[in-house]
Length: 64
Image (spheres, rainbow, N blue to C red):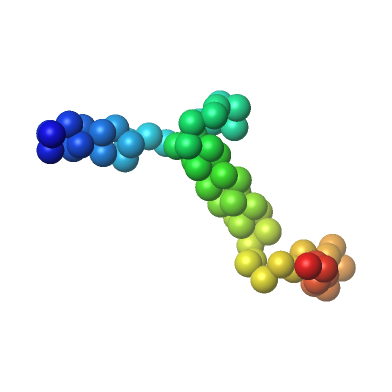
């Protein structure tokens, strides 16, 4: 039993994001797709405070 779990853990740990994950229905693929989208958004915008940089150098607050 322990050997089986170790194999499953290694299988999950070795799995990385693939663009096809957006269309898959399993929990792992959906989680990877969501995490990838969040990381990409964070990398693109660069902040977590919900402000969008304006081209003129001013921050624009998002209404929540």
